[in-house]
Length: 607
Ligand code: M6R
Image (cartoon, rainbow, N blue to C red):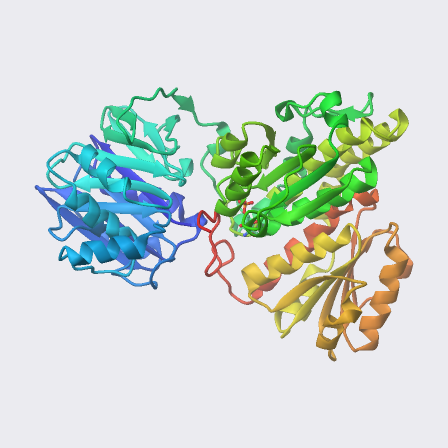
């Protein structure tokens, strides 16, 4: 989603701003722009399309030592040049880039128009430029503070004044900003990825804080002027610059990293000899675990699917009632938050607005909420204050792959801990632990020989509609497979519980419709066979993901993809991988922009 980068220092700003924008491209955007303070005035370039276009347009631009830049993901107003950021005040002396949404946009706009302001875009952000101008009497910080007091909504802001070529003002409320402290330079960004090439020493701004940034550092205060203390933090190694490492796309690289990323999610956490596990950040003693009467996993998209998978395992192994909730629904429906429930907020980015909103709602109602987050130091991780990092490493492709398997793994570790405080014996605990530590090798084994993915992609690439089916643990996998295919190949498809398919979606099947059936060995396998026959009887062509060695099932499908045999509760960690590869292959055949699919953003920081 939108990205902010601002630079002030002793080097030309423009190349650094463009490089920062490139580092944030993976987040998803549709236009980009830059503003510099140069020779006492503002120099601005912006346009729709890729950062590459902007880079060409600003080649040979001024060597100014400070500037702000932005990648926009349209919310208010279409994808047009005037709507791209930065936005300027009427006199073109103040430039603003903004992430977030102004909720009282209409009222503020009407007031400004009544004052005679003429708007040049349809965005909410332009309001900031005019509002700051209205309150500007010569002090940049005071003007920004006075303006944000009128705004209801979320913002990460960077503001530049042509009159003040030595400072940039930043303000945050609900939309992340991090200040990188370099040697003779200071860089502000909404994503540490845009900073790490220059410095690892950072300050994470908190809500309602305003920073005056100069080449020597930052002065941070609350909006009301009171002072705040900030520790300088060091960016984790996980922010090392993301490279494709010989793969054609980040998505393919990330799919292939899954044996290592799952290993990292398990490392130091499983005690096979004790038949137990430990999650340091969880802050739950066995007594606390025993007191958990139910578990609620909250997330969006792929993270929600990880929650669905975990909920099944928690009920299955720990016999504790568990469910998954879609964050955007949960947060707005006045949810019941029982005091004896353990809530998990699952998020790769740790910045998803809906999941953060759900966390705040749980906290407001006195609930106990833990983060299951990938990005260290992200807003959800900080807001929860306790939880589990999944350590999948930076996930750059918009379509989430390795984060899913790491989230599921981390939650399965929790499941083992929870189950051991209940009805799981020492020996059973050891078995569960062994299954978990055995997963990375099985993933490696599968990826070394992924089966007939190309043949399956051939069948799917020209389809008008595709159905993904699974039962039990394979149902969330079917949902995840369908989400991947939609996201990067744009093929109409849906995931369904295989048993429910005959109550409606079976009507969609016609001669040749590809049906992807996930049916590893386990309690649901035989039932899945009946469903397979039902769809074949309607002319569907079945692509079957099954356990290696299950020859009976293998011979029933048009295309069979074997995955190494595992215990049922860890099977999603294997069966999801052929579906990730399949959507990748299909998107490749269709010439899609795989790492940056249309309309999508990597971290969805608006409601
Ligand atoms: O960063 P999060 O895990 O909170 O993101 C949630 C969803 O936006 C995300 O999983 C989305 O569905 C992905 N693009 C899936 O590939």
